[in-house]
Image 1: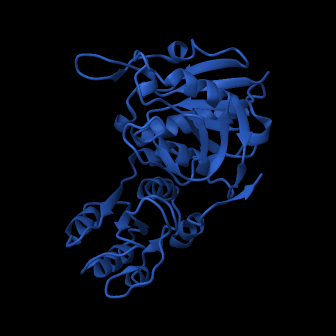
Image 2: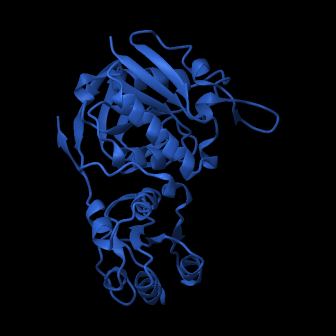
Length: 325
């Protein structure tokens, strides 16, 4: 029997339906009432909010709570309950700084706790099982949902209402008839430092490119004090007229620019001139590999708060891989 620390942050798994819509009102003790007892657990409330309302300060609090939990010799693994809207961001930030071999597993729910078809209890049971699994030691931070466990790096919410809303990343394991089957273990880069207080107030904006968009919003973000900008380009990482010049001005002024793609899957491949990815990189944009713009934003927020150099940001954007189990 393993001992698992469960850290609660709110979200749909802790929500109950009300006149004004679902609201996060449940405590950690409430959402753990259905656990089978195969493993022992302790619980801690970090915050209680729908994840679309979380700020960087709350994310830092979660990171600090996870670090304290894995440092406890009596804890074998950690589960974080979290809303699905921004789970990909918090889980990725924690994976960047996770320096223990103990598994950290995020989970949540798509239906409120008082729904007759509530999915939170089953998801929590599976997350606890994953956090207790010796075969997942060293796997870093994971996301467990509806019988599937994926790496935090690369994961995206790809559906608004599906039972399993997540895609991307690497499938690390899945459940068959209640049994955990491990299929891959992520190969992870060296951990980055935990965020400090400066992280709370970092400003990193995401600018999305579309047909005919101008660089006006991009330049506004830079000129009004953004610490970094993530440019979500079209296709393999392209942007329209004027963006290359705007990127060059931003980088020269000390504002790093990370080039991602608005496409749900696939890497940035600078291949086009005439303002495309080649020109953007030549102007100083850092290719974001296959990171989603939301995850690139979290990496940029952490690094610029440290602070980090342009070369250090480039090094940290090296895409992780996995080895087959």
